[in-house]
Image (cartoon, rainbow, N blue to C red; front, side, top):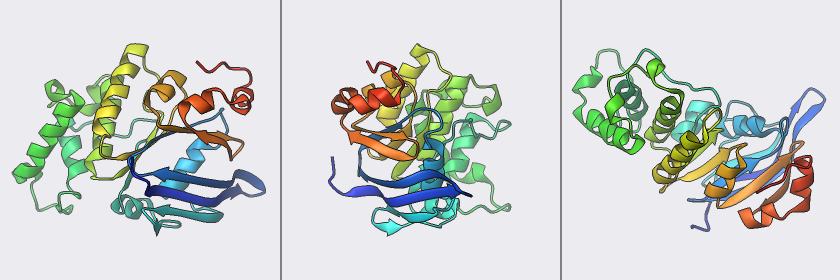
Length: 251
């Protein structure tokens, strides 16, 4: 694993009126690391993702991506700097096929700008790359199926595909296994492991089986503060983490 930081947060704070939701978070995530953020409901995990991805502005502090400040940047500019994000609720074009969704995700990274007078079907390199991505996602057999008709697990896999299709080197995945059976979750974890091999992964996840199976390091966020940041083994043994989960045993 690289010692270079892909993502650095320094004194990051977010207030909504008088309510302080994120309270001075300092966090360094290394390049090519799989880093999982856990914490009880209301800890501020989604707010933290919103700050990193540019959907919200920080009240104080700074966020850097590969050493460059992205604080205050709009989401599309953050994306073009090399960071892409998925959401808790699947965010696809439901009437477009699996292939078409992936082609849309690939256009910008493959130097094609959005222009109504260009037919994407004529961009053969884009189609070829999308088909390679479908193989990675195990969705070749669903190539021409509208995204809205895919199973929930298939939609989540496709959304992961559109996230990595942007060419980003830092991927934020927000609860990618939420609502899945154990078998589906295990398949998605293996998919994430494969497709993020050359990327930095930052993930919010509630399923502790998934967390301890996938993470290189884990950060625990409680009431807007990071109370622990360490290896899975160290976090598992941390008494403060046990208390933060209100007696929930970490296996």
